[in-house]
Image 1 (cartoon, rainbow, N blue to C red):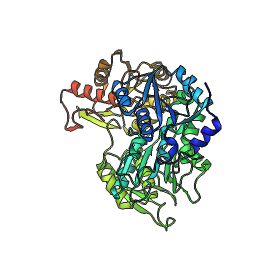
Image 2: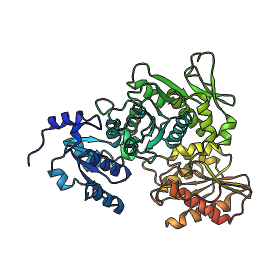
Image 3: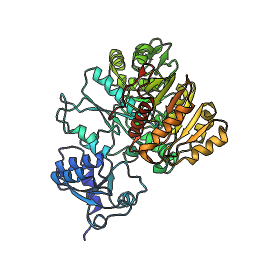
Length: 517
């Protein structure tokens, strides 16, 4: 079969930088994966007139049926080997879903034989479909090992408080491709980016993003099995700062993020803005006594500061823990870079409530506080929770994704009152406690059935917890070994707590466990 001329294909794809480009029609595109992102890619490209085939190991019935309705083909085939028709047929472009690592055989083949994009690059190229008030939406980019979703929601709330039409999207659960096709358009897109999405995102050329503001909140070991090394993970995260126009926002306490900013190739005039729990230097945002202060976005930043919010504002919103204050500061810096006035920051903070499963109070009963931080899916995230409470009965364990839990146990293990170990990948936890905290009472949850894991963990925790203790679900690991998601894990924990206590609480409770996030 005659193969297409790669140079012609490259020139054609290079010119596809607008929804209204004629070259989309008839473009032969293979989409790898049929999750929410894969379907949004297929739906978008079919609307543009491309010839789309979706390849996936799984075949979710509703999405397969919808593919047929919109006019895309579906081929169910294991994605650990190149589908024969893909290897033998001519294809102009492959769009890879973010869950597939670069070492995946099909992704590797595509990278060597044709052009590969991610969904974010495709969305950027198509961002001109809808203009609002005659202009394109500004993009604000957020990544980091932890805190991405909360910071994305906070920043979106701050822009909204200033009267902007804003969409939090991306890795937060709403595909960017769905947002850019909204007929009413947006003033601002606040885009949460995973390291997987950033890996496939170009930093130059026609598909490179040019964000108004950007941040990497923090960096710690995570997803190393996917990326292959810490350096590759660092390289992916650092892409968030490329080509930024107004402000690269970094974490003063995390020198890796400062290093990323220093290395970034940005638009002339872009500023580096640090956020800190300490008193901010000129050019940064931080905390002065009980006030969140801006010393970056005002003319007399060397001698003055603007008040953004107070500790009382944060406490009323349940955001006065150190890691939540950091999220607020990062979001505020991004919003201020976009012109949101201090009053908008304050109003957004006062009206904001964090999502479920992020250091969320379940109930207080018999002097024991039960906290759901199922969103702590890696050791770095668990640190924030462990620091926030005095005496902890720690429920820990799950799928560690190649990340070493030993340093976390070495630091916090000797300080906890007891540890309850869940998950199928428990040897790293057990070994670490034997080395670093052999005197700490340790209980393994024997149940392996999803329905029984949390009831047993809660029973064990209740048996060792004493008045003044906090029973903390901060697994420091992913959930997929025993649960559908971190949210499923958190809901089951909350349900098990309520079932065990039988409504016996001391007046402080988050109520019944939520049905969904």
